[in-house]
Image (cartoon, rainbow, N blue to C red; front, side, top):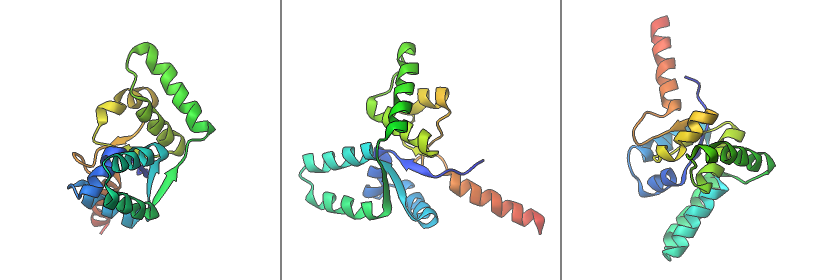
Amino acid sequence: MIETPCLLDTDTLSYIFKGREPVHTVSLHYLQRYEEFSISCITFYECLRGHLANNATKRVDDFYSFLMFADIIYLDRPIIEMAAEIYGRLKPQGVLPGDADILIAATALVRGKSVVTNNEKHYAAIHEHFALDVENWMTQKASFLQQDEENTQEGIREE
């Protein structure tokens, strides 16, 4: 298994803020290893709009504190072009995800990251047609933790 850095989907970020396990613990390990999270500007928008719509000022403050540990990846030409390619290939097949998911997936593909989401169905067609790596920290062990276990096992076998 090849370890790749991750791009957090909006639902995963919500689980982190809520302290939902096992995502919360995995996110702490991820932060320790990579020193920052990556999110799309789409996730930034979706989280902020939700907190503001609910007049959740404490959550807005917490969100901005979180952003000190986050790389926000903004849409650029290669991401927009990849998103358009995804849309163009999937629309005729009738398996078109929502625009937000397409833009998040395009961001991950262009930047060489896995998408971490509990909404795997949203990304299934993109995974199938574009080899998008998708992880679900709610139901599976994170790739970087599996890599650690494999390295430990190899070290034990060599001794």
